[in-house]
Image (cartoon, rainbow, N blue to C red; front, top):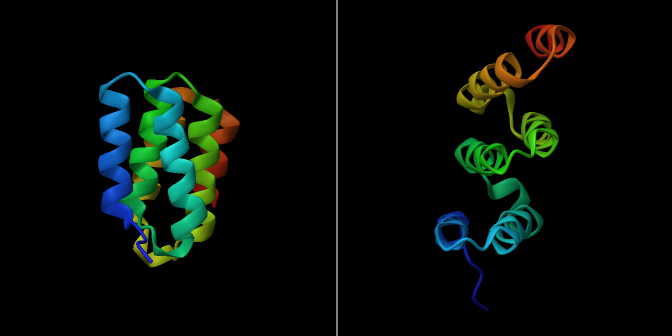
Length: 103
């Protein structure tokens, strides 16, 4: 009957990353997406993508940004969009940047 919310998952992932348990941290983020899905907001996805960037997993970070932009309503994801554009400017190529801006 106990179902953790977004904040509980964020606290768990922060704890696991702080103590060097990268696989468990990633698993916590993935489980939150699986269990909470539509209940997650843009801040959650930004934190997930930033975690992957810190782990040098740029392709995973890009996939998370794309997933979030597909799942979240357009009007509720302005901060996410800005974070994704910034990410692509740092790590993407010219075509990827143009694709983000056009979409």
